[in-house]
Image 1: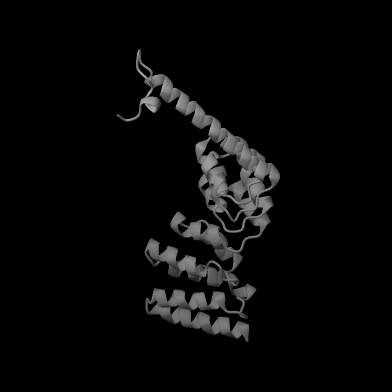
Image 2: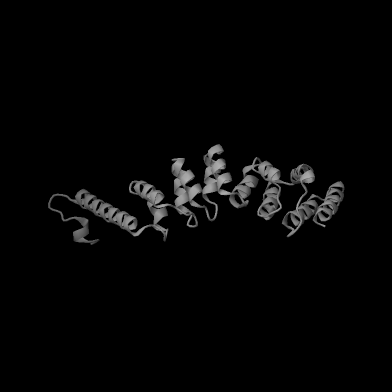
Length: 225
């Protein structure tokens, strides 16, 4: 039955394309990809993928992005089609990277093959697990590490927290990102808090020193008047 459903849907898609009703064709694709029991037969995967990309190409870039965002979580989305969508304009591919049901191993491979922009997209995914977060940390890219720290759903190992805390001691942006995490180990949070207190005292000392003039009390002592 599922094969018949896909084949009959394929016929309807062709009719919509013939009438240049591309948005309607995308709607049928979405129903097929999200159907609870239907599965695109292996023999049709290439044809379905090619046809979908053809229809997608008929839409403006922003509409393409919206369409892909609406289907990217569908469990019937063929892998060859996902691979092709990953090579699309970043407005389209970013939704695939953020939401498609990749395994940890697939994400690790994408990190290895991707540039910083792709790694940043992966760092924003919801529910990243430790094998993936460890791989992102291994890139050593400051922007990627900060984005990962900001991702409150990402699972981090103790070693990862140690590394990010070391960066935060010298980088206020990382410090601010880690301050939002409830899973930051208490001793590391205390370490960052102590650093903040020390920095505040140093800044205050500089203000007093720069404000000192002969026979004049510092601003912090004499007040605004």
